[in-house]
Image 1: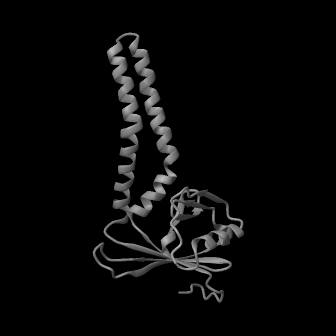
Image 2 (image 1 turned 135 degrees about the vertical axis):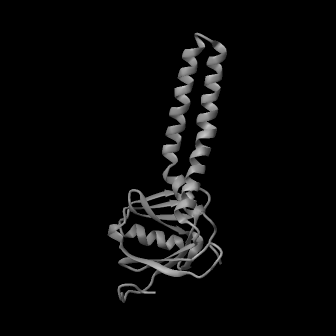
Image 3 (image 1 turned 45 degrees about the horizontal axis):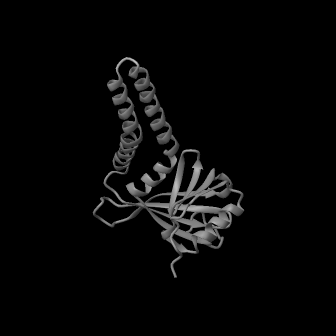
Length: 195
């Protein structure tokens, strides 16, 4: 599939599904700082309140400190994560999505396909977009995904396992060679290359 009649040679191709799980991975990465900050502020508030109250009633002060720590570091992150998953389910609706990325020397073509229901496999193209490398905001490598940010809050998600032409390592090198800001948060969870 070539968009805009390009005559360039296709260098890399990736087809990645877009579902609640993939989007949740992105949002957990993007919201990590917010979650940590919220948890710490919540816990500190109740710990400070508990310390102050301990001068009046020790038992009530200790209860507030314990509740603040449990609420801030266990329940709050859990509830935030569950809320993100619920929003993703609501946003995606009852459909399955596939994004196909074609990487050329000067541009990236993205085609999005969707099904009519979660049970069917009747994918039909619903959108296309052409991106130039200089228009990318940044590339983030996280776990076994590439996030191609088109602005500070929106990103295309590529799964390493979706590479159908070329390898993800070579793709990363191509994008880096285009002077796209790159953040590597891959850690130890990068899958081995398929033979």
